Image 1 (tube, rainbow, N blue to C red):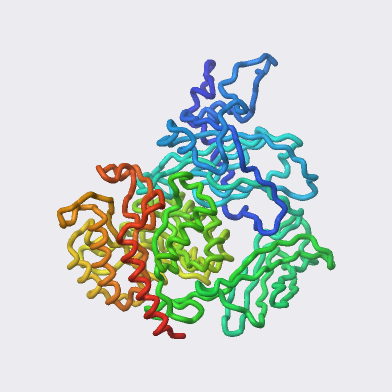
Image 2: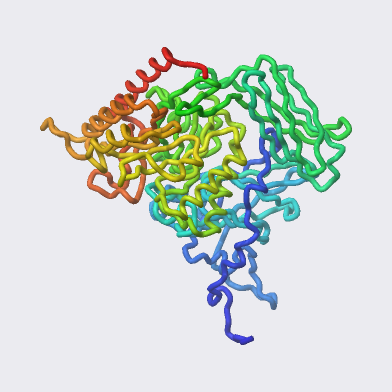
Amino acid sequence: MEIIKNFVDNIHNDDYKSNYEFPVIQGESMVFPGGRKSRSLNGEWNFSADQYDNCLRAKWFLEQDTNDEGRSVPLDYAFDDWDKIEVPGVWNLAKPEYFYYEGPAVYSRRFSLEEENKGRVFLQFGAVSYEARIFLNGTFLGIHKGGSTPFSIEITAHLKAENRLIAVADNTRRKDQIPSENTDWFLYGGIYRGVSLLFVPDVHIKNMRVTLTDRETGAIEVSALIDGNKDLTDKTVTFSIPELGLEETFPVNADGTCNKIVNTDGLSLWSPENPKRYQVSLTLKEKGEVKDEVTDVIGFRTIETRGRKILLNGKQIFLRGVCLHEETEDHGKAVTKEEIREAFQRAKKMNCNFLRLAHYPHTEWASEIADEEGILLWEEIPVYWWIDFSNPQTLNDARNQLSELILRDFNRASVIIWSVGNENPDTDARYHFMKNLAKTAKKKDPSRLISAACLVDSVNLRIADRLESHLDIIGFNEYYGWYDPDYGKLTEILNGSQPEKPVIISEFGADGYQTENKSGKYVRGSEEEQEEIYKRQVELFGKTEYIQGTAPWILYDYRTPKRLGAYQKGYNIKGLVTADRKREKPAFTVMKNFYEEVRKNEGNNKETV
């Protein structure tokens, strides 16, 4: 072995990242947060862009200010003197010079452990874009991949009275990631959802899943996983819904699992018209003594398909929707609860009962507020356009993001569809990749519908994709009148297709910018042309029996570096409302009126199947 006498690790080691690839933090480490004792770590953190990745290369996280001889050495960092940045938040909006920055950046903060620690402590992140490497008191805890899903790390053994927490966030676009290198939205960077400490007993309830299995009898399935190093055979759990006078106790199996079907009396079903929710709790006991408890607020409903129909609580429903990105001009992806409510109220004004949350998992607040507001949701992972479908690591990334999303939102009544991709080419590699995801989703959650937003078969002009056999609902993206001006093709597709399953038009639309046009002729990309395209589209939808939902692209204009035309100026301007959320375009009214007619007809013809 060659000995290099002048080797300097932090400048000569090109393989420096191999030290930070394991352990990988995945969904298995997530801990149910509802009703737990927690402490927020939101607020001001120290921050610096680190485009040469020196925190990892030079091991800044060790904070070594002396050498092996005990002599003081100069430092190339100053964690506590760096600029302050707000968490949650995106770095792109913190300073003008960060706006287009992609790459590694370092977040740092100190915190004291004021609480007496008698159990276990987990560090929870809502989302970090895209890779997150976490360090506590100089120890590398692990790497999480996936910029839109939550993750947890146990930190019990590494805690001190005074602690230094460092997160290296890296939103570099890479071929093997989900999403890959090419997207049509702005790839914000940073810790843009909340960070907290979660305090749990040594033996605790790791997760709780509750779902309605029979709407006629009100039967509910309750399942949970108990985590701990002690014998679990003498433990029981008690599930309760106080409003219904329900309390059921059942045993914990030796492997920590527990499952029970409980019957309810007088259960009111959740729906957009009646978003009824119940306080529920699950209590872990040992010989009658309470050891742990979690709580949630849950609505109960069923969702299924029968033939070409979508059934909510056994009744046919048309999904009157619109697509929505997680973005505002003021906060980027770090949207506030107030901004989410504003978007939902705007959708309701348009007579929507449904939103497609594109193209990645939105904040958990979205599904929680949708539960309150009575909005049905399509949630998806960013298997978007082309990715490295033949790469097993990429598939593992996608499956983990899907698993983390399902774990997070399983108890949300509003979520009715898991989507496994958007506008992917129908290749063999893609088919096997997405078939795997569809099966994963159905295995982890058989209570919901599986879909994907597919492209049209442009050769045969049919709704046709091999993936359809693995989907419950076919998503169909089309832009006739815009990217392809020939409406005749859309007519041929809709009339010539004979899908055996319900179809949702998961995207359609056109650019819409405000002009001073006085000629009476449509200007390409104007709001007037957008309005006319919408009128012609909805006329065709109304005549097509198997279309059971529509979701135009998109509710609000939004940032994207891909759109650099004279009127786009860094925005996708297909929104029905301007990016500042102040003005509705004429096409908004077209959809509002269309959905009002659909709602009236649905009210007259609604049937229980």
